[in-house]
Image (tube, rainbow over all chains, first blue to last red; front, side, top):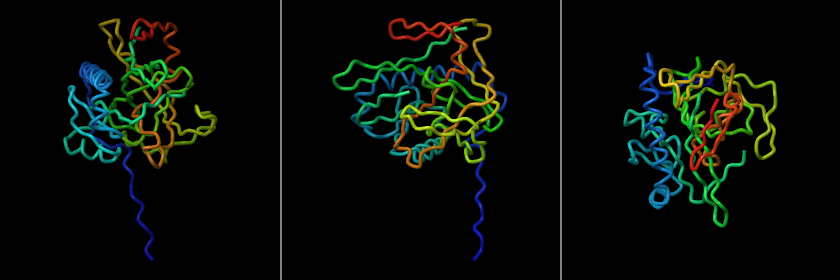
Length: 100
Length: 152
């Protein structure tokens, strides 16, 4: 029996962002914040279409939905996007209350 | 120095809506490629900023290679565990005052990383928690209508 080759795990997935312009970074976060607010406002109607799914929103539009994180990452990657570039929310059937 | 998290409400049947304050930050550390955005829940009950399952998976953090903390943490459910340690982290937040320097950066010796659950659907919410290691820099917290202001 040959010993199984150990898969090398990358330190990080996604493209690197060198020489980041802080103005761009701030604008990106501002846009994300707006998209999260939009998800919150639209949650009842989104829940009807995407119940128990992850939705990824960009510019107030659902661009990807998926049942699990791996599918979400795969579909976003196909569009050339990372998960942290879009607003992502899991639309659970029942509201979840945080206990911290 | 001031930041304004985004406040969302969770409504559970028969109960008043519960506000949750979240803020988009960016994290930077030698173990990550580039600067990555994270949706943080403001958590005054957490001593340390902690990356939870969703972010550990989607940021592609090789958590198995991270050192295990020498201290114990107690989660909200009362269970004690040892988190992993992500060293030398910078957290970027947007400051709403001081226009010439709108970016505030907190340099932390480490943040915690939890081992992601095998089934992410058991903890599907895509956010991590911003703990008191960052929040202690904002001694004034003010709730005004639907907004939370963290001020210095």
